[in-house]
Image 1 (cartoon, rainbow, N blue to C red):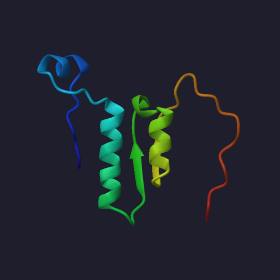
Image 2 (cartoon, rainbow, N blue to C red):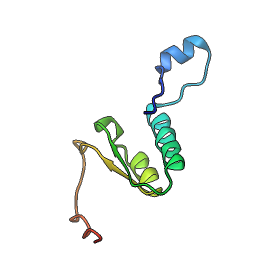
Image 3 (cartoon, rainbow, N blue to C red):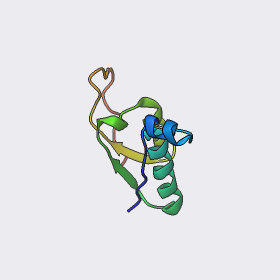
Length: 85
């Protein structure tokens, strides 16, 4: 329901505009949806390109649940915490 074009770094350089990375645009879009739907559960399903720790941490602090593939270098040490009823 919400989309944004993210031009490449090269395209921005050729046009003389500032480049905004994909994760920055993605975070901005999800946080906008969070503002529009404050009382709703928000679950984001994304591919492994969005499995960056800073991106996931920023959204989880705002109450957004993210489902993504694990990175190949992911290190899981502890089991998931128990779910709230």
